[in-house]
Every structure is written in structure tokens, then in C-alpha cells.
Length: 463
Figure (tube, rainbow, N blue to C red):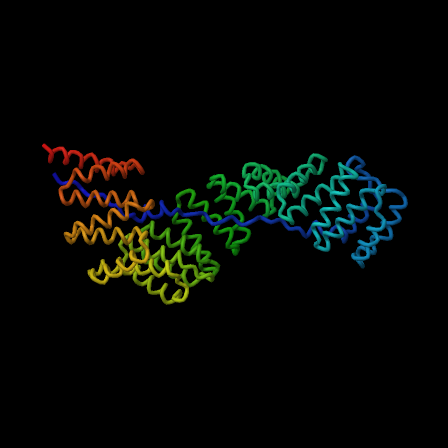
């Protein structure tokens, strides 16, 4: 009775499943801080501040007549010499003075980009007047600038409690939740923000990112499509939409997006490597090779791991010519970047290609050199075990199988390959415990079926 062998080498789809088509990190929908800083140049704001200050008495502190005179003198000074205005306000603040003075001093510090001092003054204003709506709002915005998003969200939420319902406040709260990875809360806040400002791209982008993170791929694809229509030259929109397409298992559409970014000249090495992965999954290996090759050239950091991985994938799916060409490109571009571990991995890839070409003596010499320097290179150990097994050198094969089985990442694969070696020699009883051990650690239907067949053969042989 002859039983089929199990393919213990990863297929193209297996490689992609194991490696994962990881979504690129989300960009941050950072709202503009500029509008918050320009209020002193706004005549309407100044007018309101001087003429109708205190209308919202429940959320704004009152100022005395003397303080009103101070502001009459201060406003031209703020516009002409902010540094002097800071000094004037600092001298005027007392424990009894209005919280409006600390608030205004906080604004001046923020205009000078001194956010910690600005935050200190806003807190001082809130301590004097706890329901100071605008102080809570400005403190929230400053805390965002200081990357204190949890505290910022609390201040902005307090602004809403005090009646400051506004699209920008909701949008900023959404941003804080997005950065904190509270995607459901962020989505709710961004949705509210868009009710007030339906055309604001910052909030649309934030909402689309929340949808993407919650695996609401269809919604995110649609929303990114709207953003692309408004700004087709924005590469980030195309890349985010590609993530949505990958989530929907529409890899060809994702590849189209990546190609558009590539033609823009904005595709970095990460994008090109992901494009190569998609082409491998689709079986378009020439396109995969070209994407991987361009990724090596585009990588300013000159990382060695991604291109080595790309060659490994091409070899594993049987694309030996493309793998050879890519390896040559890598050697030319990264020749001075390889560390000892990289050199051994490249040597292993070359040995695998030599085996394919039938140059076994050179390949085995290279593999033995590798395991001599790195005894934990499971791939090389298995290649040596396979070679010696095929050449009727059972003792050597057994030794290399056993060494590979001691390495956690290769244990299951090594035991299955070892079992197949025994099956090939009709030593079914020796194969059974190896398959059982592999199945116990990582159960698979194909291995279970194989084990059942081997067990039958072992019983037949015993009888």
C-alpha cells in the first residue's frame, strides 16, 4: 500500500497566511492647532471679549472694572509685544483676581509654543473658576499637543458638559480616543463631529480609521473613496483604502491602489513588499519579483530582513530564476549591510538554489558550513537531512533530523519530515510516534489522515 507524502514546505498561500499581510500603521488625523491660536487676531473675538464678556456667566468668570481697564491696555500690547503682555499679566495676577487673567496668560504662553506653562495657567484658571468652559477646552487642546491624550479627552468632555457642543470638540475627542485605541468611542465622537462639519476631512479620516480598526472594511473603503475623490494625490488615502480592500479579501483592488501610489512615486519599501506579497498570492511571480526588487532600491534604511524573506518566498514557491535574480540585486545593493546572521541566511538561500540546479556538492558544503557556525539553523539542518536521506546515508540523515527536532520553531516540521523518511524506508512503526508528537503539538487534518494511513501500514507489517 502506497501513501502520498505530506508537503511540509509552505505554499505561497501558506507563506502569506503564516507571515500575515499586516496592515500598515495608521496615520494620525492630527487636527490643526492653528485656529485655536489665532483668536487674539480675530476682531469678533476681541469685541466679544471686551463688550459682552460674562454673558455666559455660568461658564465664564466675571472681571472687575479695573480688570476691564487692564484688558483695554493689554489687547494692543498682546498684538504688538506678547512678551511684554506676559510680564504685565504675571504682575497683575493675585489670588483674588479673575480667572480670566490666568486664562489669558495661558493663551499667550500657547501662542509662544510654551505648552507646559500654558497648561499650568489654564489649570490655575480652572481652580479659581471650575466651570470655566473655554479654559477646559483650551487645556484639552494643549494637552493633545503634549501627547497627553487621556487627560485631554477628560477636559474636552468637561467642555461638552458645560454646554460647549461643537464639531471641533467632538472631533478632538474622537482623535484622543483614536490615539488611545478606543475605536468604538472614537467612531461615535467622529460621527458627532461630522454632523456639525460634514465636509471636514480630518474627521472623515478619523472615522474611516476607526472603521478600519474595527474591521468594518466596507464602510472604511467607501469613506476613503470619498476622501480620494476630494484629494486624489493624497497617497495615504489610497494606502488606507488598500487596507480595507485587504480586509475584504479583495487583494487585486488593493494591488491597484498600491500601483497608483507607486506611479505617484510615493511607494516606500513596505508598500512595495506588500505588493510583492499580493502578487505571490495571485501567482504573478514576475510582477512579484519586480515589486520586491524595487523595494530593495526604495528602502532608505537598507534593511536586510525583508529582501531576504522575499527571496525565501520565491524559492519556496518554485520561482528559482526570479529568486536568483532578486538575490543578485540584493547582493549588489546591500553588499556592505550584511551582518553575520544575514550572511549565513544568504548562504543558505544560495545553497537551496544550488540544490535545484543539481550542484549538490557545493550546496552541501555551504549548508554544513552554516550549521557549523549556527547549530540552530533549522532550515539548513532539514536540507542536510533530506539530502543524506535521499542518498541512502541513514545515520547522517537521522542525526540532522534529530537536531532539527530540538528547535522549537522547527520541531513539528522536522518530525513530519523525519516520519516521511521512515515511511520511505518502510519503517512505519518508527514513523508513528513522530507523527503523533507533531500532531499533539500542532493538530492538522492532513497530518491526522497521514498518521491514520501510516498506523494501518504499521499494523499490516506487524501481522
